Amino acid sequence: MTDPAFDVAVVGFGPAGATLANLLGKAGVRTLVIDKSRDVYDMPRAFAIDHEIMRVFQNIGIAEAVAPHTSPFTASEYYGANGQLIKRLGSIAPPYPLGWAPNMVFTQPPVEAALRAHAARWPSVTIELGTELAALTQSSDRATLDLVRDDGNERSVDARYVVGCDGAWSTVRTLSDLSYLDLQFDEPWLVVDLKVSEHGLAKLPDVSIQYCDPQRPATYLIGPGNHRRWEIMVLPGEDRREMEKEEHVWRLLSPWISRADASLCAASDPAVSSRCAAVSHICPRASRRSSARARASSKV
Image 1 (tube, helix red, strand yellow):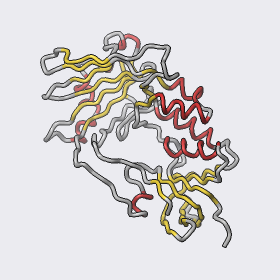
Image 2 (tube, rainbow, N blue to C red; image 1 turned 180 degrees about the horizontal axis):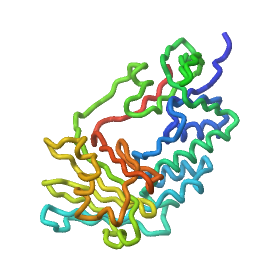
Image 3 (cartoon, rainbow, N blue to C red; image 1 turned 90 degrees about the vertical axis):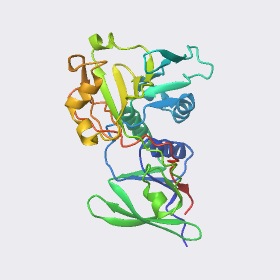
């Protein structure tokens, strides 16, 4: 029997899959990466990274490309129901003892694009976009992936290992019958990202804030540049779809900001876009889940 065409097949070309593809490519490992989407998802869900992730980026050679889309996490404050300061957590000032700021915020689409572009440079990495995993079978020394392209073409490929980097609803995990621990903690929160004008920035706090108000908890986060994020709890009995509508979003934001000083980013689950200026559409993050969302990684 001939050797498998690839040593590793990576399913999913988001930040995790693209980072893995870069690490494998740097090591000269024959790698296939597939993703059913052809484009970078332009509404980042993630918002924070840390110094360890930045060192991984540095190791694969993209730290300089990523850095402009990041900034150190600010100090944070926690306020009670009566507006009283409960706690303040400071942030470490440079020079950073571990080279990078311990905690950072970032804008996901341009970082993901940089990861993808860099992965495409490795000779040992093959990238097939618009390609979906339909079936996965195992033999003694390989896995066989049945792939379907978005033009309807189908084919099968072999790999020694398959790594699922395809998110919380992983096809790899499902096809591999891997267990998933759910701690059954769901809270719907509306996640809103704005690009704020200089005039608006002057009105906003210069630290990140958790509003511990039992009537409606909320979080305010400072992103790179003029990017600001609010996470606002959707209360029991509220219609999530109604909460997504712009008039409701601006009503919820009214204690801090108005339309005159900010524009809604493109939004999804949870929400934000690097193309904020022209887009005013918002969707909620479906849940804040304290469950094990481990991506599947297996030899199958």
